[in-house]
Length: 308
Image (cartoon, rainbow, N blue to C red; front, side):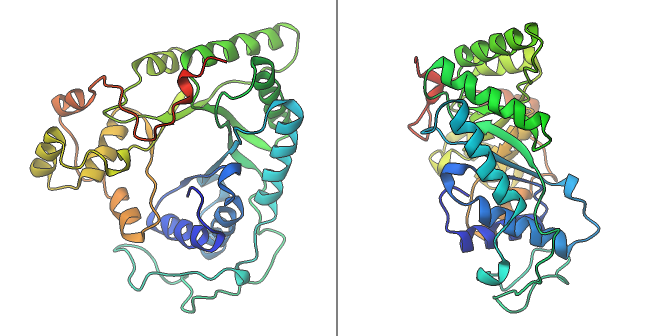
């Protein structure tokens, strides 16, 4: 969903939800929260038997913003998007000509412009997960941002807290700050989620060990390595054995490793393909061999090594 215009984000997100996705990841810096929330709200309206609680929408505190006040304002802005989505009659929905097998299409609009009535229940009410996008700024500024997040959680505006792109040093510093806050009788919150680039060629054994020690869920972005490893001998071998695509094998590896994979695509056929990973398994040996221990980030952006 990174950097997509609102109309594209809305159409893509709605297709993903109809396909079966229940976790959508966005961020303040992507400037598409409105589109994600518009699609999610419409999906709930089209599927009244599906509860809001079954969906999990995450967003993030932008890395160019720093400190308590900036985080407080950013949370308020994101919350306004979550509670007041765009009207979908202002968004053109480029619906696919065909629907995925097994999907109930009765609620899909036939006209590409879907003019839905506005109701008081259109918003999502709260943010499921709020993350610090990167360990930017000083330690004091990072701690201030976390404090603002904890306060928002106490008010019921955010359900879960986490960090993105934190290295082990940053994580330890935050754990220490949380302990200090609680020692002073203030709520310190809990790091529930760590999100970062993880795939077979960027295994992050140190972060994984830390998260296991503290019971932190790992979300893996760029699990498909942006397609940079298509044709890799080991990957090709597994593709030939399973009859699956490279993308499906990598999503499956992430799942069997216990991660929450966050594959990204703006193409409906790819979104559907990436979800078709529950009818096969990798062998234990294949999982181990794909855990290469290498350090080959595909994004060329790794804040986990920042030293400030």
